[in-house]
Image (cartoon, rainbow, N blue to C red; front, top):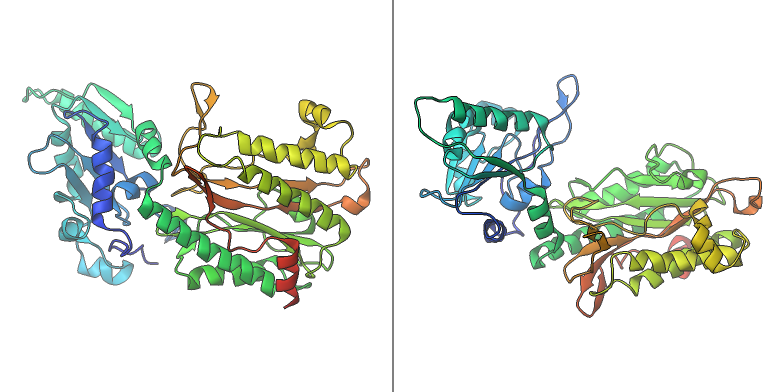
Length: 445
């Protein structure tokens, strides 16, 4: 039961984190302070804890992957503006739980100007908050830490022996920092490409391994083995490996059923690499050959994704890829007799939502549903270079009396990760096969 590595990832320089902190400092005042806690460890059962993963905002600004840590950025501090509170070195605990950076490592490996024991935070941090005007923090994310902050504020105010001024305002850091995180820089794009390649290799292995009679979890094991071989320590989210009717459950994660000859298998899974996520969906026939009905709906979904791609360059509105995908899906369903009426009628009445009920994408980055607003002043925001998001149209046909049984329980989703460029887009997960010809050739081989 070890923790994550204490040393920073070799692919990301400490200068990168310093630049991120500098960019944040430019948006706050000289007399303000930023305080961000990492994720708390959570008990799973008995004396077992869930595998620890650092808070995304905290890691984005520090690269520090250990639990029990707090970041402080104090622009006006004479001894240095970047301070880490973290665990001290402890030979006995490290023998049981894994290595720690310690106070010296926090400074040498992660560039902290100062480092203090996390056990001393109650004595030290209130003094750092004195005479500050605003405290920028991730309000509401960790209630226990919010209570600590309020306690420190109260301590400053009630200390009658001092004439120090307590901060007069807590400010939610999320909007400022999340707008910064929304635009990916070169170092982040590098990691996201890597996550995409690892994930694509896993999906390819799933196609190669899949056979009728296997269980969903067995295909999952083949795929996630490839994730680990590629350098991903864990998934970006729980894998969806859904055969047959299970593919019509959008967030199906039981992954326990046998795979039947003649069914489709929908896999929605991505690897995380150095805290950056990939998010890929692929759908393919368990026996390696699409039926006519499966192929017809699959080609509609694929065409809708290509139509969405055409709206993914800078200058388009966030909703334009979704609108483009919806039009293609709606017309395709009309052509196949699954929807009645004209395209205009289907779009106006939104009857297509019986078969396509989710959005076509979401931001992607350190979180699989990454941070950033989709609207600005009630308008869909304009796409800008450096934004990364998913494009994931789908069709799901649950059984109904009015639907010909030959279409029943067909669930299809095709998802890729797109980087917005000034003059177009870049598909970061293009190496995952998805045309009918590619899939059938791979599975035949």
